[in-house]
Image (cartoon, rainbow over all chains, first blue to last red; front, top):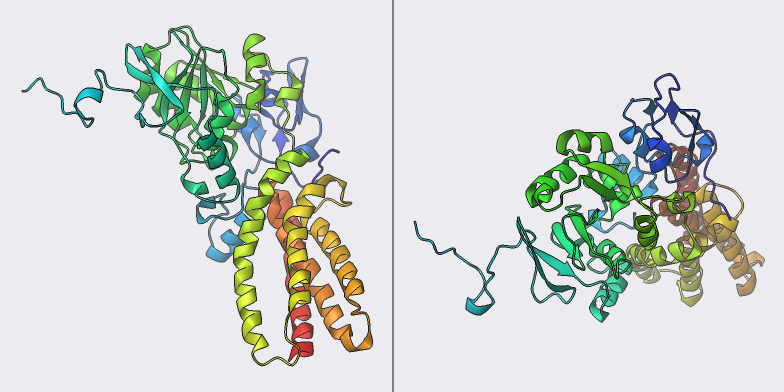
Length: 97
Length: 360
């Protein structure tokens, strides 16, 4: 069974003009969102993106942007309660990641 | 100045050469030391002992989970030389054990980053498995004086924290991202650093989900002690005291949210975790109320109350499993929570009022 999360929410953007076709994004993506054809990357299925940011971090041409953050409700609640950015800080023994 | 170096160890066991990586000689997983131009490097066993298995079991149940780590630095597997590959990993002992047990028969170096005892993927998300730490660790260990090649194998899930081109720019080492799972490392190395699509894809099998549920359950159980405390106080002056049936109903809802929903995750209809948890929580509560014979006029208030509270509780606990899952995005979780949290709060509040009306 394939896991599918909410549709049309991922903030992933790829600038095809800037792309140099190195293939790093396809190499690092844990959900195989990218494919590279004729020296250009393309987004195969954006709904599979979990916004981990591996592609953007490793793109030498700065062609990818994505708002990264922890996909963790417990972290978001802690962020709301403490007024800070949600961080995957499990040092309180929270049942997160 | 005196030629004598101060040494912490007692006379005979004293180190002839300083080790690059501090380690405890009593650790069973260290089998010896190998000498390099930069100093001694501990050699690590590829077998797990009882203590390692017990340690893994304990952290899975949330015991000492935040302090299960080894010293960062360089380690050796087999008899590596200056041509041997360098694998980079995190200093969470569970991660380190998962890696080394897959390396039997290999000669290689392991460069352990200081991730504060957190696994590779989570540490990469936080940035502790990151470019700066990697660059710093390469310099601190003197890696460029130990290996003659300039290539590092990083776990693919370290990529959210590490900028490969930055590492190359700053250290001269090129970065190859290896497979997601340690069990594929041998195949990866033997095929000349080629990872298949399968090796590059993150999964979330039923087993993967099962091993995560104990921590969820323990965390929920700790919060439940407070609930039980409050119910105990209410019992002191309640007309209908909370008893075994209430305990079972509540516990069932907790187990539904923390264990059953994670296990059945992909087969439950819908996409939002809170929805999945609510659905199963509703089934549980309906089943329990029917079984208890509470669908009668005298108990209707209690039945409706529990139907509002318990599925919401399961929904909340299931929603928290997003943090343990391997595929939820930040934007998605925010969207889910904006709808789910107000509904959960309203439903729980209304349900608690009804249950209390019946009890007081």
